[in-house]
Length: 400
Image (tube, rainbow, N blue to C red; front, side, top):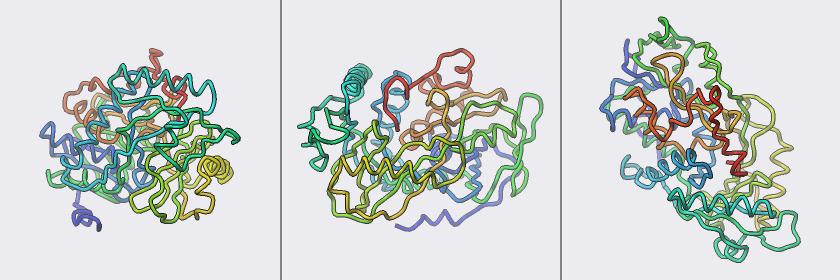
């Protein structure tokens, strides 16, 4: 499928917009779409310094799930998953959403305890989840090695049947197409260089394509939000890290679901065209380089091949790294800032893609009503002052 025709339009910015969204990736485009659809706000500009959805949206591994442990996390991701289930109709665009389920493998007794606890919490929150033993893991995904004599023996897994994947570039084009149809201006090659302020308000955005007056501003530049907050003098507790992934050559369909292993920080699915999509862990160093350290992904892929012996002879097609914002509690920061009309959206770490429609819906609500949507209220910047952290990473013992 070719890029939609509107992607070749790049309008000149108007002098003033009611809302300026900085970041033309999935979150920025979804926010623009729901501003128009849910709130009738169409005098909106989406500013992207590169090309549309060319940052993390082009570098994620397309995994969508909502089986998180803590109430706050389950709330936003389940809201998002429900939107994913109707998104193709909403956007009138083929996003190739495939609900093939996800298995989170357990390799130790502590993994089993943590996993069963998470399943029970999911059920209480109305999220579909179940615990399955090694035999059922083998039935759901016959290519997983469940023998006892491997480094990471499979003792069972959590299973969420409604989880799945979608084609990330189609998702971005679908949101952008709808926003464009609503009259929203999407400007590529438009880098933000600074802000104009008046007391506790931002009055305008300075860009490489001229100055723009703004009524409200939303910061949605994944992996690079700290660059924008530094311009505004807002201290934000995020660090940028490379997050690695790779795809193989095209293969015949052999992998019917998604398999994740937190013990080795690797997960594997098979894309619609046939390539294996393998995600690894976050590199330990800070940086904006979109490649990552080879020794980290080499170690994780070695573990993946032990779990999936059938992949031992698969050829690497390409590898890359997205840049993710990581917060101290590994949960996002969404909501108000010290500036009355500036809204922050960052720190999603490995969860950004799966949250795309849900975040867009909730951030649009927050902007339109100047009041945090209930699903994102727990993720405000002030939690680092009050101590009401949402430590999903530490509590659930599951990465990605």
